[in-house]
Amino acid sequence: MTASTTTATVRELWPLLFVEDLPRSLEFYRDRLGFETVAEAQADGRVFWCRLRRGGASIMLQQAEAEDGPAEGRGRGVALYLVCDDVDALRQEFVARGMSLREPEIAPYGMKQLTVPDPDGYAVCFECPV
Image (cartoon, rainbow, N blue to C red; front, side, top):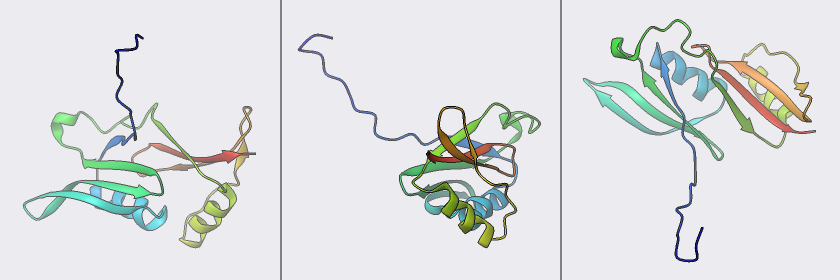
């Protein structure tokens, strides 16, 4: 890179997840995992897209349509890792909201992890340093 070259800063990542039942997924992320809705788009009085945020993490959800391909295997190979400061406290929060979850595990690379499967098969992993 030369002295005259400038670069743009990338500030955030907002993954977009296609979901089969947007109200169900919204309930999961908002009411179970504690995300808040910060933006949404509607058509015919129904929300078809939304962006959710918790702390510095955002996730976009979009109602899947026929042109988005089959639902089977949609979440396969997709994992979201959300770095937090206390996985155990998050687990307690989620259990208090009615979720049945395993105890967090320590990954070989030193992160304590709590993986929560979402309704469409995406893996949502909250993790913090040990």
